Length: 281
Image 1 (cartoon, one colour):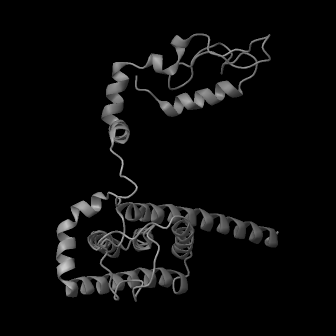
Image 2 (cartoon, rainbow, N blue to C red):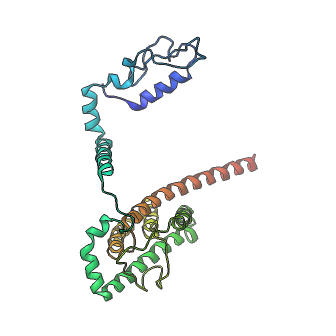
């Protein structure tokens, strides 16, 4: 029998909400997804639940068959569980970067050859910066198009949420400019002006646009934006324009705020429908 965590959780809740005898059916039997430990009230301690026997705890009923089932059918959480254990070891044995030293960034290590090329070839750096600015313009134009022309709110809401929170976080913790930064007057924001490092608005904007393209089944545009976003990330690391964590959080922010914008849009529609129903009634 495979372990069913959802059913066990449901059974837990049903036990907790039951009256008097501390079990679902009143007979102490198990419910779907595994037998649950019986719980009673103690008459003299002011009430409360307790397990009759530790041996009836959920983990005490796991079998090798359950382990094999989970490893076979739920391998992604298993991989992440192993990753958690591995990085716990790395974290607790890592030699930390001294305060006077520059931050360690794996993305900078990987892109050292590109950094050397761009350092010695300023024309190529300027060209790539200009192309990156064009890509940012494409992101911005698409998001504005969905709002002004197509009349859809989700992408523009996601962008507003994203860049407002980026401004708050970017100002709250102002990271030092990476050593070896290769600036360009053609890079966005154009003109060698200051900018927040954390987190990357370049990455977040591209993710927001790509997600909307997928919802609208504009698959070609979506894949094009994803590829350009990957190239953009490599370039930003090569020019030391962002730390790796800036890029990673920028991608996550795009997904997060797109989801929040979707929830906001759904609640807005629900409120409008309710108001319309009241008006008609």
